[in-house]
Length: 221
Image (cartoon, rainbow, N blue to C red; front, side, top):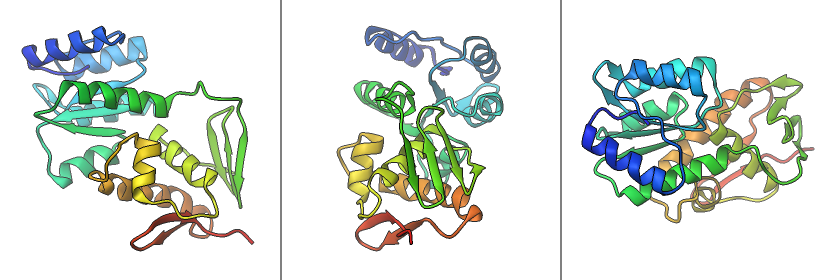
C-alpha cells in the first residue's frame, strides 16, 4: 500500500488488516519498489501522487520485473485521461478520492479474485487459433505467446467461455470486474481495445462489437 498521507494511510492499513490482509505500507515510490521486489506482494494499492514521483512510475518499475502483479490506483485525479493512462500501464482498477473505505476493500478483493490462479481443475480453452491454458495461465494465438495482465486474461476468458453469443457491458462488469452497475462501462471499452491490440496483429480481428448490445468473438469456420 503506497500512500504518503499519514492519516489516510493509517485508515487504509487498519481497515485492510481488519479484513484479513497483510499490509506493507510505503510513503514513497522508491520504498514501494523496494518492498515489492523483496516481498513479491499479491497486489499493489498505489496512490498516484507521491513525494518522489507518482504511482504510474512505481507501476512501470514493478511491472518491468513482474508483469502479472495486480495494481489498483488510488487517486484524486479522476479525469478520463488520468484513468486511461493508469489502466494503460497495466492497472486493474482505478479508485478516486474521496472514497468509501468499504468500496476499497471490495475492489481489492475483486481484483485479487480475478488474478488468482487457484481455480477449478485447469482446462484448455480454444476458439479458432486462440488457446488459453488455465494450468500454466498462458495464452497463445497461432502458436505465438500473448502476454496479458490478469484483468485482460479474465476478460478474454469470459469471452471465450461465452463464444457464440453476445455479452453486454453490464454482464462483463458483473462477471469480470464484479461490479453491479454500468457506470464503469468505459473501462470495458478500454480493455477490449487492449485485447485487440495484442491479439489482432497475430490473425484476423477476433472481437466483434455489436453496437448497442455488447461484444462477441467472431465465428470460427
